Image (cartoon, rainbow, N blue to C red; front, side):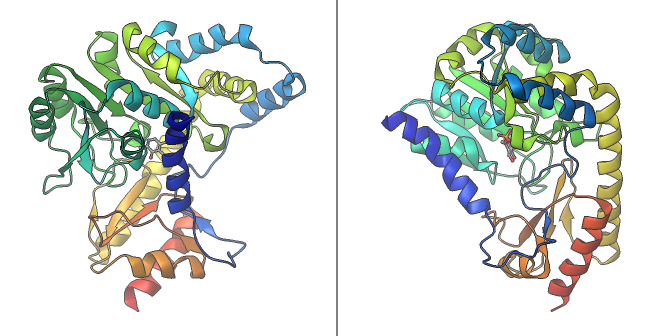
Length: 360
Ligand SMILES: Cc1ncc(COP(=O)(O)O)c(C=O)c1O
C-alpha cells in the first residue's frame, strides 16, 4: 500500500503544480503550459478508437503481443526489448523503482523533468542533482563522476531536456555510455526527440540494440498528439525489461493501444509534416524574440525557455488573466519562462500578451 501510494504521489504533486490557479479561466485560454502538441489524433486514429469502444468490456489480453510487436518494430527492436506504460511517466517511475535503492542514487541535472526525481524522493531513494553548464547543457562528465563516487546509480538524462529545451549532443551521450561507472544504469528520456533538427542530436536507441546499460523512454503524448490517451514505452535489453515488468501496473487501455498501432502505421507521413510545422513556428518565435533582443535558450523541443530579464513569476501569474497560460516556475532558473510552441494563431496571441507584460 505504502509503496503504491509513494508511486502515485509525485504524479499528483506534479499535476497540481502544473495546474493554472485562476478561478475564472478565460474560455479562449491558449494553453502553452504542458508541452502538448497543438493537433490531436488524426482521423484514422480517431476511427480506430471508435471501433475499439464497443468491445471495451473485454481486456483484450490476447491482442497485446501484436501491439507490443508493432511498437517494437517501429523502432527496429524486438518485442522483448520494450515495455509499455501509462504514458512514459509509468516507465520512468518503474525505472527509478527498479534501478535506485537506499544506497544507489538517482543522478540528474537541475532543472530537469521532475517526474523521476520526485518518484525517487517519494521512495526514499537519494537524489543527486548536478549543475548545468554555462550553455544550459548537461555536464555528462560530472554525472559520471557522481555515479562513480556513489559506487553506482541511475543517471537520468532528458534529451532534449525539459524545461530548458537544450540538447545533449550525440558525442556527449556516447561518451557517457562508454564511461558509465560500474553498477550504473543510464535512463535517457526522449519524450521530445522528434522535435530536434540538429544533426548533433541523436536517439540513444542504438545503445539499446547493442545491449548496453541504457533504458530509453519514449511517449505518444507529444508529437503524436495523444497525451490524454496515456501511452509511453521503455526500450532496453530484455534483462532490464524483465526487471521493470513486475513493477508496472498492467497493460494499457485497448482504446489507446489501437490508437497507437494506427498512429504508427501512418507515422512516415504524419510525423515529418508535424515536425516541419512545429519547427517553422518555433523559428518564427525565435526570430521575433531576437528582433526585440529578448534572450532565450536555443530550443530543440516543442517549447522554449525565455529569459524575462526579471523574475518570471510576474509573467506566470499575469499572463493567464490575459488569456495565455505559460509554464510553471523552474528554479533555479527563476528568470526563465517556459513556453510551449502552439499553432501560429496561438503564438500570435502569446507574442501580444508576453509583450504587454514584458513592457509593463
Ligand atoms: C521530459 C518528459 N518526460 C516524460 C513526461 C511524461 O509524459 P507522459 O507520461 O505523458 O508520457 C513529460 C511530460 O511532460 C516530460 O516532459
